[in-house]
Length: 321
Length: 251
Ligand SMILES: Nc1ncnc2c1ncn2[C@@H]1O[C@H](COP(=O)(O)OP(=O)(O)OP(=O)(O)O)[C@@H](O)[C@H]1O
Ligand SMILES: [Mg+2]
Ligand SMILES: [Zn+2]
Figure 1 (cartoon, rainbow over the protein chains, first blue to last red):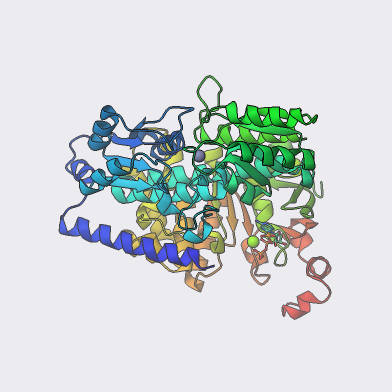
Figure 2 (figure 1 turned 135 degrees about the vertical axis):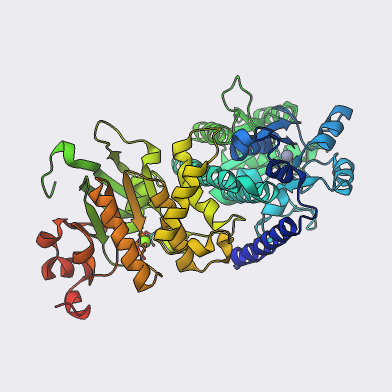
């Protein structure tokens, strides 16, 4: 695959465009120009990020140069999240808006459209991922699965993309974004290794993950699991009784030890599934709660991306072992 | 240990290090001491595990077993006191950043948070670029440079870091002869100011001129010690296979 070259060509172009803009003194970004005039060295770039994952990434790569506001709290379902009037004005006043894309923020499309009409600086996780690395929805090939953060190697692509875009936005501090990205990529390498080592503890035929909605396809693809979800990729449709019955048969057939609830999805469909299995005289545990579409909260200590994905793999492996 | 060293002379201690990417280890049972204020060449065939050893020492790869300690004169070394130059093939720099800014990345360890690089840092960075012959490229984008030029910029970044320990993975690959000579002078300067270098090298012709010590490796440590004791036909053959020294035109 020639994805590296493709990316390189793309960013080469971007960097040439930016340096031209600065030379001509034309429409460069206002933040960099303010700094060049030496006005306020300490003024931070105001970032508004939609999901908890992206707010975490913004803080890590931006460090002290940025102030980050995350719109969605822990446990919030991004598929269903509707922007409040306060959110819209925060987005409009931000220096940089960070959102996921791939239709994850399914109810915010109109808001993003209006922001792009304003010529706001926008960083989208979607743009970091090569099309060939995206998984499509089983039912609709034109629709991509947005849950890319479950594959750490894709999150590394998002990290690099984010740092690059910040360096283009604020070239004076390119070295800070580059260094923060370099250090964080190293931590992501370690986290990835942690996941792989934990997966190795499971016999291969136990690597089956059953959850409420189909969020874990990238996880499955990256780490060798079979996944089944009660709902489709998005949470906006309820699971039907036929789905529950079919999945119950699958669990009994494969003698699966545990199924999982998710932090940002109501638990009742998984509990119904457990009841359906038990009605047939077989037992399946609720193996614990997985973080799906948001990170953990401060109380849990899993408020960072790395802590969250480690907690998930611990929950999964400990329950299926 | 294959040669003795007093504790106070040790810069890096590697013990019982075994590394595997999947099931089969690529590096077995490595026990080695790197001495302070010495330069050590790591030499071995392609795939011998040289880059793996460096990365495992830096904690970039988690080993199956073993541990690595970096020592300062008085205790354990801080992370920002270790400079690393990756093997050029592993660098993929399409980041929108100027050459000078790449070198300045080496200075952040000295600045602490919040502080921005000042005049002194810029001078040091410019200095380092001059030393590797890249001063004319200061304001160019790193992505616009050739592989060899990029490698020189990363060397400059390591020099600007003013580190205590330098781990370098084939820094001479892709640089021209005059740059190589300039880099060798820099390495000698680093050693004479009491700092330590571990450098993956592939040119048997220059190994005796450039380095104090030699570590021959092929999945295991084959031999390690002062150049004059270790650099001989028998050890080279044990590392590369029979008659390899003759093939390299050195016998
Ligand atoms: N990320 C990786 N995943 C799997 N195997 C790897 C990985 N990196 C290296 N290896 C394997 O580990 C072994 C040692 O590789 P390493 O890069 O350390 O060798 P090297 O001595 O640096 O070689 P070279 O002289 O070509 O740079 C090789 O067999 C290589 O194929
Ligand atoms: Mg190598
Ligand atoms: Zn989801």
